[in-house]
Length: 392
Image (cartoon, rainbow, N blue to C red):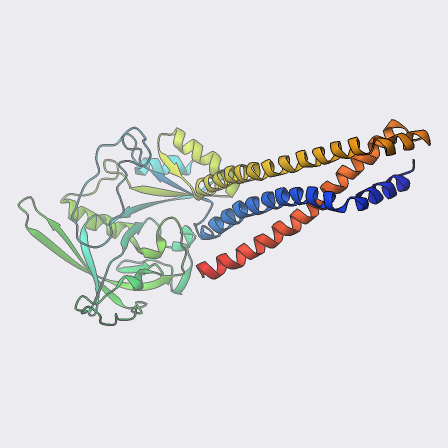
């Protein structure tokens, strides 16, 4: 039996039993559509999560922190101090500090372009511009050019000098009028570029006496929005030397980097491909290290598991549909014994008969699969439109 004769026979047989073929194919349609929709949902969630992390930061950077308390997670790492009520403090004993010697050790690793230490303002305080008060994360960086951190300017400069600061894109939104009454319209965010900000630091003595220190700084630049993992949008960048001097005042003694260390340092690599390997090397040296890549990979791993789970649920529907096809073909064989006998009487071989029934089963599967893909795609588009309308 030629291929075209076989194909003609298969189509004729399927056409004679339209209702049975349609009912069996519907099972395949449902199973295929379930797989398409469920896996598409998982992929869509992964894409949405990845897009939200699109500004997570420079993927060639590694954040290095001291190893506190036996390296348990990030426990013991000093939290960034946000300008507001608070007081001075000093870090607890550590196992592995990030010192000046550490910076040289990290810089010697293969592929490292630069190592930039950071420190946070460890005194309580407030920010004031005119009648408005605000808050932000005061951050000292060991570079005079913020382009070294992969940051871009929205306005002004990215070069730090003594007495100047560069603010994140969201810092102006953190200012408010302390005299504002309930129900009163809040003032618009101030334009801080080329303005002077008054920073008031305060600390407390052992007997509870408050001591204040006022510093005036000039806003030399405003950063473009980053949405990075380092909180740059809410940071006020200052030279590391100035922040070190203010922290010395807050602690009542000179900061010794060999004894106190740095809260963190950022290692910039030549390429993204070197990041994970270097992160492992830094961890092996005894430091804590993290990178945006680990976050992205963790999210990808989670959604891959979700895709497998959803695909498994849909595969159960496909298995049921396959059993339906097998049942239909078994019943068809039992009902067509006379037809099979006639075909063999006119010279058809067992292989020809088997090919006909397998072809019919394949035809049902093909029709159901195509219908399932179209139905799943259509359902995905509808879900996408509804989701956009709901979350917009």
